[in-house]
Length: 416
Ligand code: GLV
Ligand code: MN
Ligand code: MN
Figure (cartoon, rainbow, N blue to C red):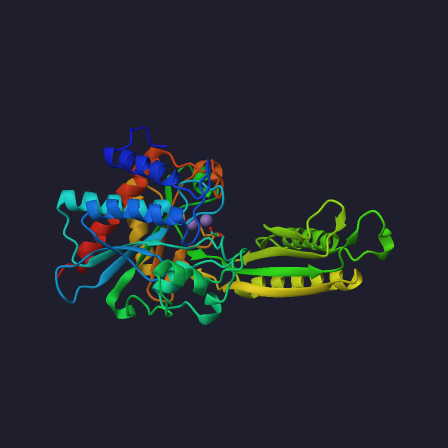
């Protein structure tokens, strides 16, 4: 860890992250979900900081916050920088937020140092990346890139509200499927800074690294249906207990993933109905999240788990159904942009680890529009999706130096 104290700009960034982290839909914890009241307050605050950095600010039809500064000429290309402003439930304050606030701080420094950028910049605070409300991630970046589909609009939250209706409420009118904000030829690329969310950088003793690739991921909602009944009067052998079937399935998911590293598979949500201590559960919904760096292995694992679930259900007299809510291929980051970013990392800290991402990022969707590069910043104990998520202000300072250096290098590459 570098010994010098963090820069004034890094201290400001740290205090902004703390302020943003206090904006929540739930008292005492950090939770912000797609189009929620807290997301509105977060966008207002971040929009204020964007304006202070000289960006003009707008929100698009899916709630993405967009801060833009024009380039020197009418034909200037645009560099995109950003991440998401939504969070998981009871989240930390860095996942997503860092990738929005770091570029704002970097652009302030670029301005103060008089570094001329021969391109336009857009800082993006995506409205949805975590998939908390609708069990499907990337609604914000899909809207921005024109990849939102009618099937996305039909997704329902736990209260039965579909994405289309949530957007209509938010915008005060029926919202058409958005078009891409840019044609690919208008863009230079997309840069996403993010906490690593894993332990590799900490183990290597460095603050930052680059990301060669992002693992593919499949998410699904899985339903077991049996028969609800009296917990006191129904003999064990006459039951069709949907929760017992789901429990067997969950253990099978764990067993299968353990046997096939680097496959990871997670059941993170479970809802049992009718949900009473003295009633046999008749219907259970579980989430399933499957990830692997190799798409064919992920697909094979998902197919195998569906088969296992069906067999468990059949043996127990249950019905079994699967609704795929998300399916993203693995993404390779841009070699050229990442090589340039790695130069900035090396010039700041000597070495530059390449750390593949097991987590999903907005860059996955942006890669359909423009080359993508990602900067990872060390987080304490590799902890993320947890309120104790932490980045030391000295590492924020390193991240800031790297991003400013990267912008300067890109500027000299594109200088006329
Ligand atoms: C996003 O954080 C994900 O990888 O689930
Ligand atoms: Mn994230
Ligand atoms: Mn996350």
